[in-house]
Length: 433
Ligand SMILES: Cc1ncc(COP(=O)(O)O)c(C=O)c1O
Image (spheres, rainbow, N blue to C red):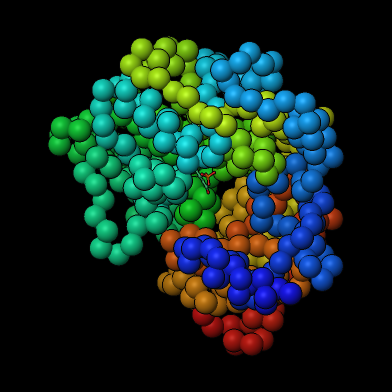
């Protein structure tokens, strides 16, 4: 059945699509933190942040089916749900971030955010961190440097700032925040001097495509100051970082003590339903509206808004922010323990319910473990019923980013499985990369 489906998929879908794991799995059902394949095998989902409140949460399913069986239109009629959602997000974001646009994907949100920043500042240049990922529209694909192929030229309207990697970057000691923020400033000055100017710094405060980075605490506030001095806006891409993912706060940018000019939301917002948003200040929104118009056929439709409202309710009612802190601490302690027993763990990145386990061939040289070996470990975990993924510039980081309803028992199961996979790897490979 799965082999047949694989063959049909390969001929029916564009070859750009990829599948996870050496032996792709056919998932047919999900509930909470578990996914089930076509043979009924259960997997612990340690990967999918989109199912933020868990797979098939009954309150999300109820909101979706109730609204879908009542009405679905667009934002050109009055409807309370889109207003309710904008107001709920305004309260969550606080401050002056109170003017909302609704779209369907994180890519669309970032595309619109850059368009707003260009309109409002009159500048064209955008600064991003190296190896960042922000989406797939033609504009945002160019800003997603993780997708750059060798030899690809970075357009002259993009300023590249080194990602604040205190494990592998050009500065790993004290003063790293000043050092990496200085690179944002240098990228901005290059844009200014070349005549394109600085419209925005677009930043994901998990640095997901880098395998999650724990940036120096002062990095973003210093970088934001440089960007604003050069006349640009700060766009916080909260598609990964938002919705309690990193614990302690609802939003990733709060952890770095900055208030962005524009915030973009996506993935976890609809727990699997496509809903995303751009939120900015009334002043910026007014200035954009004077220069440009915006309509999105599906963005802000009542079904998506009811789903997004249900997700916020579940996070609040089930106290999932507290859960992230409690279970995140179990994962942190367990991963640190594993790094003491497995030499191939170079370092642990992460926070809350988002962790990157960086594998190396040699701890001294930090030589990355080869992609095929890391994939082998992740496929072995899958064979043993635990779903993770890989990422990072060297594809040597195991990504653990489960639904927010992950429990302490789930964390222990995941840690035990990872320990087992690393032991099997060491037995088969004699501890080499
Ligand atoms: C940080 C970040 N921004 C934006 C996006 C794009 O979101 P979407 O795939 O919904 O277009 C992604 C997707 O992975 C992302 O990780």
